[in-house]
Every structure is written in structure tokens, then in C-alpha cells.
Amino acid sequence: MEEEVQQQESLEEQPQEATEVQEVIEEQTAQDETSVSEPAEGEPEDPAKDAAQLESIEQKRSIVNNDADRHRRLRDDLNNQTKEWKSKRDALNSQVREFVDEAGKCREERDSMNQKVRETKDLRDEWNKKVSALKEQIAALRPADKSDDKNGVSVKQLKKQLQDLEYTQQTKSLGKDKENEIVKQISVLAREIDEKEKSLEQNGEVREVVHQLRDAKVQAEEYHHQVSVYAEQAQAFHDKMIGFYEQADRLRKEADAAQAKFVECKQAADEEHRKHIEQIKSVHEMDKDAAVFKNKKNAARKKRIDTESKKEAKEIFERFKSGDKLSTEDLMSLQKSGYL
Image (cartoon, rainbow, N blue to C red):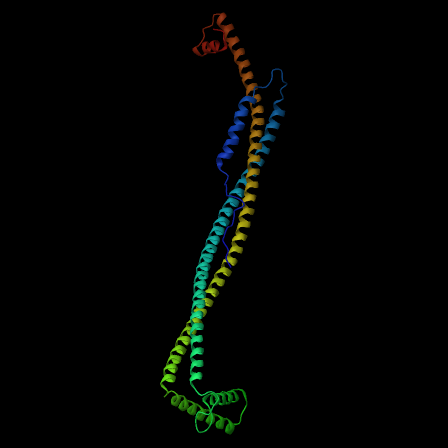
């Protein structure tokens, strides 16, 4: 069970910068400088109508500008959520990688233990074969299927009787007296077998092979014990590996859920940013429309002031021609109006 954590982000976080709005405004301003002009000559003026239209534009501008601010606040809030989900996803993926790494280490330890199990089994089987061979050698040195004492019963036959009695004791329900009798018989047979084997070992050749057999059994048992130890350790590492993988799978699901929320918030933030930019453009368009009416108003006021100034300058000039003494302010008005 080996998996690598490779979660590809579907979207990279690209927070909207304030410079984007500034670029929109600068672009619109550049266009305005070439498009906004003085009202055309001869254009009929209706100050009341122009004022009403200007007020309407400013009211709409206020509404749209407030809406743009609302979209900006939503965008910023969603961007903050996006960062939080990204941070959570990355933290979970980091934990997943740690668990997968730990599982990999346990897998290596398990495989190492399993290799030792195989190697030790081979050694155990090799010694078991030696045990079997030595038993056959001893059997060949002993009188086979013949009476080896005055009772006419061989060690092999006695061992068979002992095995049958032990089986009866372990598998059958016996009364107390019967069980005591069988226990006594087992004790007698075991003692008799031991005595006969010791007697047989008086033979020097048999005694040497018996010693070899005992050593071989010890070696076989030792390797069998090691096989059990290595197998238990291999199982323990395997269980730990499975546990780490299960934890990694659980956290990976949480990371996938965090990734889904990250994408959801990122897309929602992008949409709010788009709406914010659209509203900012609309506000600037309204500013441009309002500028037209303001220019008309300023032009009308300038024209009225010019007319009044010329009228005043004409009156001053008439007084000047009549020989009246003029003040410094009167002379400046004449100069400004082009009479001097």
C-alpha cells in the first residue's frame, strides 16, 4: 500500500491589487481629457433641466459607488477565506506526507523482518533435516522392531504407548480413578523409556549420535524461536504501516475538502472583484457625464460674468470720455475688458 501525495492545485491564489482599480481610473481619465469639451455654440441652455440631470447622475453615482464598495469588501473577505483554506489545505497535505513517510519507513522495516524470517526459516529447516537424519542414524544403530530387553518391548513401542496414553488423557473425559491410573502409567512409561535410552547410549557410537541429535534439536529450536520473533516484529511493523496509511487517507480527504473550499472562495472572490471593477468603471462614466453639465454651468457663469464685465467696462469708458476721473480699479476693469 504505497501512495505518493501529489495534489495539483486547480487555481493559484492571485489577490486583486488596488493598482488594478488605479489603472482603470487612469485609463478612463486619459479618455476623458480628449472627450470632455465645452458645450457647442448655439446649444440651447436650460439650467434647471441641467441641474436636475446633474443631481440624478450624482444620486446614481452614490448608489453605484456604495455597491462598488460592497463588492470590494466581499472580495477582501473572500480573499481572506481563500488564504485560510489554502493554509489549512497545505498544513493537512504536510501531515499527509509525514504519515506516508512514516508508513514507508514501517514498510521497509517490515520487509527487512520478512527477509530475516525467510533466511531463519531456511536455517531452521536445515537443522530440522539434520535432526531427522540423526534420528534415522540412531534408529539404524538400534535393533529395529526387536525386543531389546527381557520384556520384549522396544523403545519405539514404548513411545507409541506413551503417546496413546497422553492423547487419551487430553481428549477424553475420565473419572478420577481412571485418570489417576493413566497418569501413573504415563509416569512409569516415561521412566522406562528414559532408562532404556540411557542403556542404549552405553553404546559409544549411539551415544555420540545422540549428543549430536540433542545439539541439532537445540539449534533447530533456537532458529524456530527466532522465526517467531521476526514474524511478530514484521506483523507489528505491518500494522503500524496500515495505521499510518489510514491516517494519511483520512487527512487527505480533509485536504481535498479544504481544496474544494479554496477553489470555491477563490472563484467567488474573482467574481466580486469583477463586479467591483465594473462598478468603478460605471462611477467614472458618471463622473464624465457630470463633468459635461458642470462645464456647461461654468461656461454659462463665465459668459454671464463676461457680459456683466463688458457692460460695466462700457459704462466706465463712457464716464472716461465724459471727463470723469477714474479710479485704479476702474482702469483695471477697462484694461481687462480690452478698452485700454
